[in-house]
Length: 91
Image (cartoon, rainbow, N blue to C red):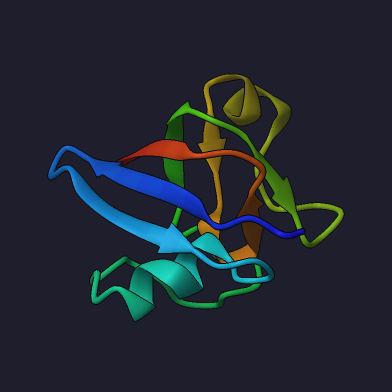
């Protein structure tokens, strides 16, 4: 059974839930957050944030994040779905 995941956004501490099949960005916007965004396909990198804890899976093969950025915890919420509860930091 698909599970909803909780996301907390730092530094404000805002919390929202991501429904199964929903991207993190879609859920953030539905919760009323004014998240920086543009293309919604992982190309522009406008929505990039950093994972403090948790993990995600991408809807696209190449999500526009370099291997080094992935090591630092960077991710693109426009093409990512949570695999666990998340704590994210806006960069």
